[in-house]
Image 1 (cartoon, rainbow, N blue to C red):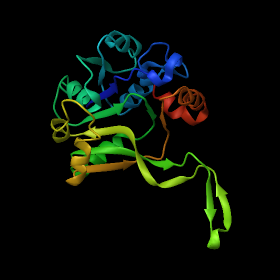
Image 2 (image 1 turned 180 degrees about the vertical axis):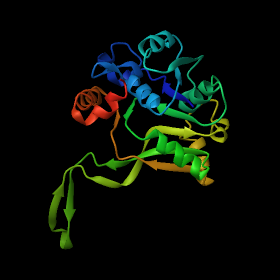
Image 3 (image 1 turned 30 degrees about the vertical axis):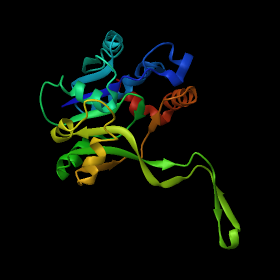
Image 4 (image 1 turned 180 degrees about the horizontal axis):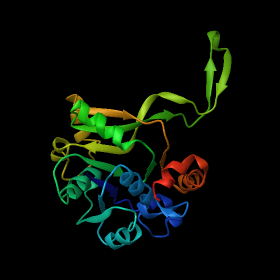
Length: 235
């Protein structure tokens, strides 16, 4: 099975912390962010990873992700195509048709890709999207009768789920990806309306790296014991 990493982000919000690198190559605990994704994919048996990237960055991805156990195949976009367009463009570089893993290049996530793929095949869905519980960015005040405060909860989980940026895309979903634009604005809502999109719940590690604050947190987490499983997948 092959995989696609969406890595066209320019890390503009990271500013000087990116040191001019594409976002997916910004170091986290001493390794490029995308190296953790490649390690996760290799642990699930993926041998070929296509990297959807900006033109001119392909050599960086080839060199910095080399030696991790998978063939790295950069697919530089001739012009910005958006995430969905980037996925479609990269999918044309596959050697074989069929399901493909797809990951956003700015996410750090540890989930069971084998179980996700198995569930996808079992249900016959067109696409499967990994979701994580949404945590409140604020502390929550519990209210009782007559607005009596009954307690406080610090950043609790809310009764909602959000995308982890990890997908299994079947051939039908790939064929319906846009030439330009975001697949989460077009392809996935269309599949959901048809009952053809499945969610795979993940309660493990999930971090998005967009800002210097996010990067500092990712460094701390990936240097801690909590991330040993994901780090171990790099060998």
